[in-house]
Image 1: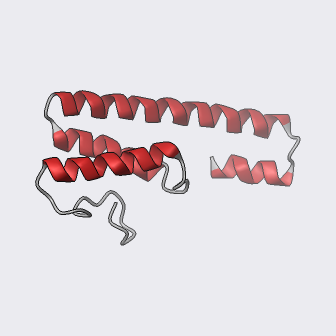
Image 2: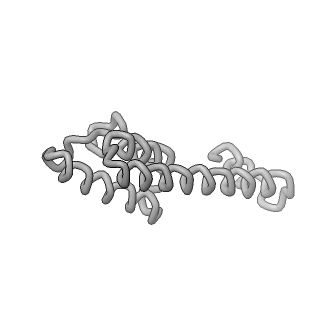
Image 3: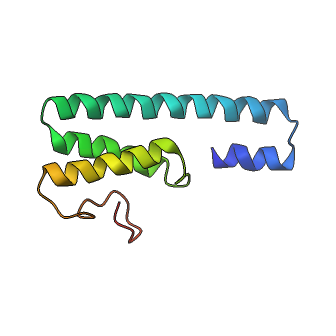
Length: 101
């Protein structure tokens, strides 16, 4: 997605760059929605580690967009999972940047 955004900066009116960026965003949105659905099913099945994997995937995908509501929601859900698993806040690491979640 970042490459298409860069291409759009060079040529903002390029219809091909805009189309590819739009399609990439749509696929990303679908992928994130599927991950949230999987996490919900895993929580319902008391498969907290599976839900953790799904939420961490969302966090990794949206790591560049930390103000995105879905990133914030996944981060909040990780906090709830830590509580359910009896972990300390910040014990679940989704990305290796020293930031915890």
